Image 1 (cartoon, rainbow, N blue to C red):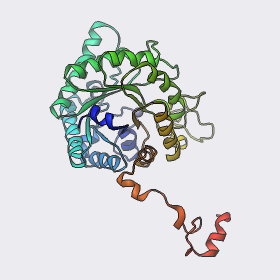
Image 2: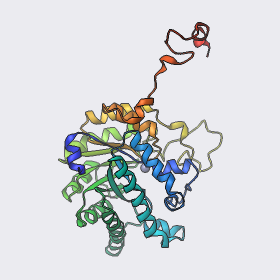
Image 3: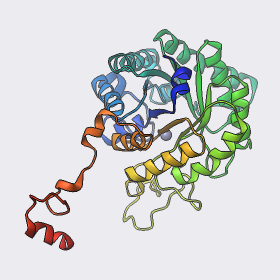
Length: 342
Ligand SMILES: [Zn+2]
């Protein structure tokens, strides 16, 4: 079953956030953020795909985020471009087959887009090569994500549509609530939908609280399903993006700001993201997920907020048997009485 048929049956959940999670685990370097782990430890990438599916993700997204020519140039490893992409797609395809999930390719912001003819041609070629490898791997669709510039998102959409594949295209909206060329998110999403994207919306950068208000306008502006994949961090109107969060309590901030390696104190609880899932569904969002910072417990909470019980729900919290806070009649009375003093 393809993405559109799957969406016709109800909302789709897509876990992302491989870059941040593998950085936390010690297999990927913050800064350059290149997913060399795909070649160095393919088993870890496969395991993370499995953990997200176990937690309720309907989609296995090949870890080709930032596996493009510009990022590999930056670390002097352009020769790894094709092997890395093919390996990432192969790993994801294996897990998608084994779990019956949708398989998605992935292209993203190139960081070199400028609206002039030669740069547009170069960026389009970067998308074309990655999309061609995804097509060969038999993906169900391609995710094109985290675009600050609407024009670059349009180029990615054209590359994916040109290969005859479905495109889920999401924009990254920073502190100013528009794209870098000044398009409102709803206007930009309408252009992407008009260009043939199957699903349009927002991902990354903004947390649940500051992404939600933008979604209603997008929903009203397009006929396609709308996607929403915030970062699971507690952004708020004064600091609407995870890059703009400030931490006056931190004793040490190596980068002068919590982003990207000291965001831990701002992490959303599973209940925060479940509430977002409910609000987003209510706003008409049909393609839900989380981006940088996400972990499987977040995805399970979103799946459950969507009325599902993924395999990981077998271990969803049940505090009734907690030694001190529980209610089970066989618990030791003295411990239960001590609960207030814990
Ligand atoms: Zn992200």
